[in-house]
Length: 446
Ligand SMILES: *[C@@H]1O[C@H](CO)[C@@H](O)[C@H](O)[C@H]1NC(C)=O
Ligand SMILES: *[C@@H]1O[C@H](CO)[C@@H](O)[C@H](O)[C@H]1NC(C)=O
Ligand SMILES: *[C@@H]1O[C@H](CO)[C@@H](O)[C@H](O)[C@H]1NC(C)=O
Ligand SMILES: *[C@@H]1O[C@H](CO)[C@@H](O)[C@H](O)[C@H]1NC(C)=O
Image (tube, helix red, strand yellow):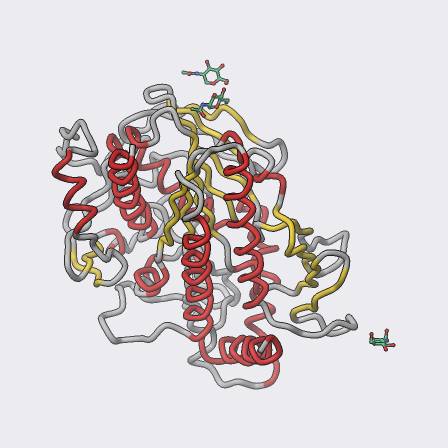
């Protein structure tokens, strides 16, 4: 069984390599491996940008905020609760529809945004991607309501834990919240800003981000050390887990770092490795590894909080698909300017598998958590809705004004992260709906 699934993982991984990332290319043997090279090199190239320190703006002016004052003062009128609980909406299946309103915030005024995702300020002038709204099949997804979100995290600490996708989602949230209440950056980790915390004095709420691309303990590859990651699948990363006591709500978001070359450990023994020619270990792919990492993470989180008689709210953001279509270093690596239409394109096999593992592990952990009270857990199943947005990535605008001197031979592209503002704002719109549902559940059981 174990053997079969790892063989399957390997096969699917290579399928992904040739079909998903480089679909439109001939596959000469070098090109077959190019995707791994992309995944191995791109993050290194982007790393510096990922953590580029940015000050928070003094005033979070909101150019886009139309005249839509927040009037609702309570997120959970009993009527709303009833509706949410008894007729839950499936927010994760639907389509993108045109929307004249545009985003809540303007990327040129929200100073929290990581350079590489600040597409407008980097000269992206084609702004059609800002005017789409996610329409779930059977219901309506309300526009983000910053005031309600803040009320739901009042006196709480919300932490985003994971890789640069976690940070991307956090920054989207901060920009939207900042349209009504200015956060105060109260903590930042020295060098690369991998760990940051903001305080919203208006609601005594903390929002933070913890860098932990595997969630479990690990050592990232580096220029000075080995050229592969090391993951210890049976123990969590204490950089976040050590502060679990102070966290009320946690969003886990990982995935892309699992594709990189790595050696995997469990206890004292080597379990295997991935893309590790030259090392004398068995290739086991990364699917089972992601599964184990999530299992360890969710189990440990719940057990530690249960030991203190304390519940916790947990959200697992599912895999966010990349959209490389051609050479990653050519101008048109993710050139689309519109969402895919229904049925236009199918999710790649790797996206499908990564998402499936995450959903399954959330379901398993949910069942296990039933024996404790006060634990809420949900998958933020953004894979499909994000896949439909090939137009929402920075592409060449990960760097400022990439075409200022004409189109050059090599242009670095980011077809993994999301422009801010952009489609990732929708993730947080759905997050808010999940929080409302949770709020309804807890006031019922109390
Ligand atoms: C965003 O705000 C800036 C500064 O106020 C303004 O110059 C710019 O035109 C705005 N961008 C958009 C797309 O509205
Ligand atoms: C927010 O963080 C500060 C430290 O920066 C801490 O003193 C405070 O208790 C935290 N508040 C909440 C509600 O977590
Ligand atoms: C922001 O945080 C700093 C450092 O924690 C603190 O000194 C300052 O008073 C805070 N400002 C506001 C407006 O709360
Ligand atoms: C690789 O591992 C196998 C099995 O553990 C061992 O027999 C062999 O000597 C190793 N080869 C090298 C080059 O280390």
